[in-house]
Amino acid sequence: MGYALGELGLRRWRTGDALRLASAHEDPAMVDQGGIVDRASAVDWIGRVADLDNGHVYAVADADDHPIGCVGVTNIDRHRVGWTWYWTLSDVRGHGVARDALRALSGWAHQEAGLYRLELGHRLSNPASCAVAAGAGFLSEGIERQRLAFDGTRYDVERHARLITDPLPTPTRPVRIAG
Picture 1: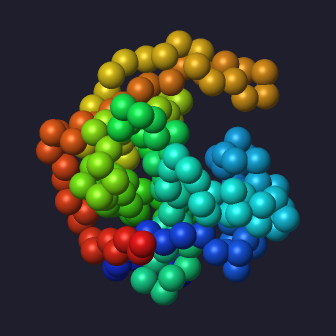
Picture 2 (picture 1 turned 30 degrees about the horizontal axis):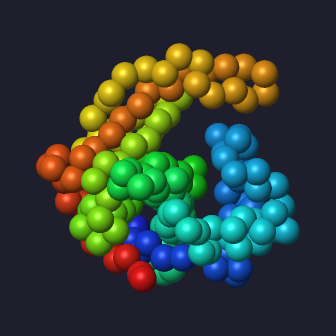
């Protein structure tokens, strides 16, 4: 694996991360995530998420500051509701990285950003993403039939949410969040 997973950091994406970001999107599981196909599209994406009016996107960095994933809360609306999402490199999946990053992001979003409700959704065919959501205290709210379409195929999505009043599990490892 080669990553230092003892402590994680949530920080802004940097242009210098573009090659690693593009490489992450070569994984077949990531093909439909963000339209990143090369370094140029990665640089463009980093620029677009750097200063969102209605959201925050963070690289999940290992203890050596290498990006190993991403978490975000975007589409924040006037009702103090935000859409959360996450991904990790295939090498670190199954090690609690996404779960701990989502736990930290959720605490920050509720306490620092003042969001009342956080939502997320995953394809029913992705039980690992469901486990991440549940492990970060998101409760299932039901199935959205044929919600997503990729390559001409429609997919059902399970919707999860957590409220500021829901118990928030603490990350199992330290997670620093950079301003």
